[in-house]
Length: 163
Image (cartoon, rainbow, N blue to C red; front, side, top):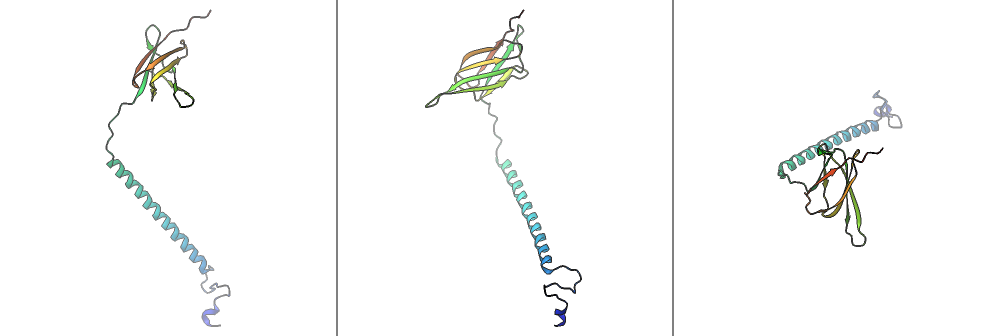
């Protein structure tokens, strides 16, 4: 054996370095750190690209003019003083025409503190509007909805006293 080969074992370990690590272990650690650094760089570039695209979109998109939404407005009041009825359930029922069989559709909304319920995308045509509120008589009537922004006023009465 030569002098350089005397310090190496037959399985490739260099006994002369004193660290006890194999050359393949050192290479594997170097690969892992390189892959980690590359992943970090790729993620950083991707994040920068996303931020740049969002900034370009917000600058390029002009401010949209505020379009009044087309919603049916139902005002619910009750009693002799016509005070607003809050948290009343308002049901709007209508029939959607289909080719084979008509579809019955029901929308349920609640009134706000002012006693107003907004029904989005209200159907045009005949619709049944029912109002149910605790402490008030249930109300129901068919309405002809001609305008999607139509205002409908509903007045509730107190129920008869039970003895």
